[in-house]
Image (cartoon, rainbow, N blue to C red; front, side, top):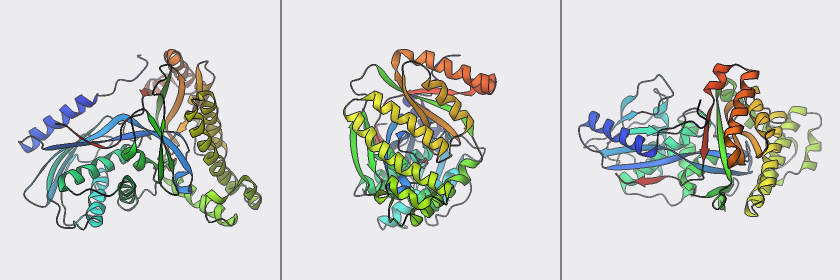
Length: 403
Ligand code: GLA
């Protein structure tokens, strides 16, 4: 089994989208846009707690090719997969409501919020579109934020009306996810999908929504970021996220603070009779600090420090925030015991999805083999064969694409 998983290339998904468009609509598309998925290096479950996060945009994107229609309908086909719902739907732009198929809610929600924001309700031209992606769907790499941000970019291109800032763009997409997809996510995924930059990780202050581009791996030929997709998604991943948000808010109230930014480790003493809330709040407070330290470490190119902060982050997510799972723990343990690995942790919401590992380039094959072997021992060979590995460089955010 080859070490790194072969994903479709950008050119392949563009060609697929164009040929599908031609087949369905009988003409060539007029415009194309794309937006990336992300991997979070550190700062997990703190975006909705006024913390700092440090993600990077992936080279993998969701891409849309589209053309105008004469009416006020949207006709949208998706190759994005990951579900057994209908792939082709038509809906009116005059009456945008969430419904089925679920994947279309991201599209409808963004169009709805975009037109409200810019007073374009009822004024947007109809369009035909085909979506294609090489972001692994449902793998915790923000495939949904990529769909949202690609849609928003398309709306800006097609209407000729631009939003004032990336902050506004991210907020519009986040609101689409809250109101149309029913997922009370933070702001990280949408912000990195629009503001990602080649060769940079993005430090995002989730309270002010200020961003800081931190050069990352731009002149290091030796280090790489390796993502391992566990291929599992536990039921809990949906229900536990809102529960964590509630617990964090309850803890904040008991500590008598307005914001986690004002809470310190000493503040935790107010939670002594609430052990679960204490653990949740301790994760948030320590993870926010670790993320600021990690950004400093990256600036100084102190990758050993960055790696050890990643390991601490995983321990905190596993023991205090309790959003890891056996599969992720086995993968992280396997990685961090290999020489050449600086750090490894679960990434994203948890309960499955991916791990992210910072390691020496020349040890990649060995580390992948070790992760597979340990996974086979703990689970079975079939599960280990389903693991996917992607090596990624920090990439650009949402953009128009030449056809
Ligand atoms: C999901 C959410 C993000 C963030 C992460 C956890 O990816 O969409 O907003 O909360 O989980 O860090």
